[in-house]
Length: 439
Image 1: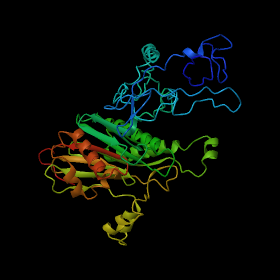
Image 2: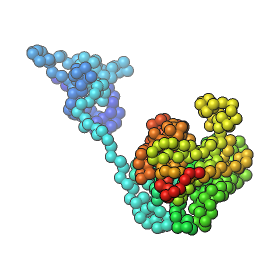
Image 3: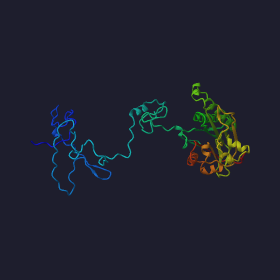
């Protein structure tokens, strides 16, 4: 009696998936002929990394070799507890369920970039249906599909959104300012405010206020924003009513200090969670430019510089409220030694409820030539401390292109390292009337 060539033992019926025993030729459940199992589906060869062909199916004889007789079939092994479930490896075909390891070169290549998810129509509909006074619904800048929650994160992909104050630019009349987070800080704690108003005599005055939040205090970004806005509003209102610019600057600094003090009035529960934090605090520097008169005011170590168009001589118009300035004023250290000390930037004056005593500084000048006033935080003057160094960084067309000049100065600080927030305001000073002198 002829016998069928032995097949690899099957564990389940290919027709009904019922368990089988070794040696079964027919399924006991459905009667399927197990000797007629279809061959495994054809597959492409798998190439190993070294270029060798790993067979997925029985291979023929090597090229140039005569095909020999078919190997004799192995004798059938009776079923039993000691019987092998799979024939010897020399006679069994490789199982398609366990392909050889290798790299597939027949797969469809993956694209270099994947397209972003299409915008969610529900978000678009909500944006269109939003109330006109509520503003558009913010959409994620990364996936362009999810809404942005109140904490600044996308509800769809979780991506943190850039903060509005990370980089700000403004041009208001003849004055312009730029503020940047810098390269090391996680947020921008600086702030600025610009103003322009008509004086009772018909001339105009330009206002620039720059504030630097004290990082060691709580909510320094709120402090700088409140101080800059309050000071600018106070200055513009006072100047419009005819108050002398120097007195208006003094009153504006006092008003800004009160606005920062008000931020310390937190609920008692807030202080319980952060009992060791200082009250919100910031520094302030500002300038008022009117017909033939330049007034500056400051508290802290933010500075104002005078840069004439002919660059001779440039001058610093403010004196820092800092440890280094005190050492120099007392004659205990030279300026180079004092600012090289690690305590140099410890401020001795600021706006905030924790300030020792508020002492607004003001000064008035009457430049005899046109130029610009550079009002800035220490994020800039750390990289151009001397007036001559800053004058070299200021473009020669700063008076006619103040916004461009402010961008250049912020770029100068970033190129130098950008270790701090950087804020710069450039205020052009017009040519004085004929016969005006300096004071």
